[in-house]
Image (cartoon, rainbow over all chains, first blue to last red; front, side):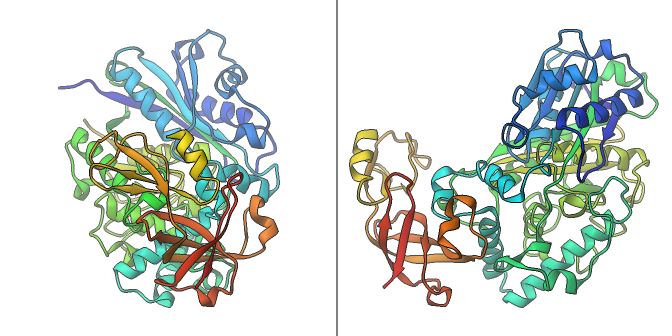
Length: 390
Length: 117
């Protein structure tokens, strides 16, 4: 049997608007995770940190050693910042996981941090646009326009008229806000209605502002360790599979925008490593940066069949008590999207779901959970599978 | 290829074509992603094509604020290359399949504008 890697501590800052810089946010989340793991700071052998836009939004680079210093770790351990757009933190997590699998380290700190709300929304949008192809953004492609292309391609493929598409998408936002209303760490802790979504400002038809997630500040951290160490803990959560894949970067090169083969590839890799299939997943956190993307993630990861994803919220399948509970944190739409930290939030939330101590809506006694974290316009994908047992 | 690109790119957007399998892309590829051939050549993307899909953009990004609202179009050029561009006309004039022609290409900023024909 291959070696195992366990999660023995998680920590999350409140997602929303922060008064402190991202490295301080991360220090707080990291200390929460370290305290939960009941380890001394000197035991940590490396830091793998996701962060995307601090050079634009905080005029700060070299984030990893700064975060280390702010935590108070002064043992000269290596620290590395990962930048893969919205998938940064899950890529950092995966690299930390691989470093333990390779026997290089026994105990590492991983996570992500981001602060976006201290500057104007238009400046954040400009920064975020740098995660797209320069040539394509110079010819007018925006993130909202991209998701509109995706939604339209999906609607054409599945014979949905514009109104039906918009109503079904609204149900996904409503579902995620319903879950988020119970999550004390969520950016927006309130329910919304169909009218709230359908009456919201149209950004790029059919995508409206309430179809989209907010920009958030936030940080989340996890302590990972070798099987030998994890076995000394009462309830470690195990990393069963960690897939990663890259999609075609230029969007014009893609043949079918309603699907992302990189999600399927990363999911297949994770399922194979874990020795499980989509039917075994009891709870998932998916990347609903725009609600149509929850549909793409659901279908391309195999959690539901092609064409079913769009109906999943309306049919209550993706609610906490449905057969495919998805984004019980509220997802990016309600928990929020602190870009370079989002993947770490998802992993912390699934860890807590499996332990049974998530502070919001919980799936019924889940044994295996999954995260799908996607960077940019689908160019970076991680799929991670966690379990109570291995 | 860079030299050929800069010459061609002065007038029209370039198109990268695989001499082996015919794969085409509007963005630079050193090796053909379909067949692995290194025989990628650059040619003119062409002036005309038709709209594959379109999205009216109500809130332009900072770099295009001066345009006001516009229509983002995905165009299949007659050369076979697929490329994004901007239409500044009434969105109602743009449909899937609408024939368009390049109206302006800025080789510095790479801004590419189409008009319906």
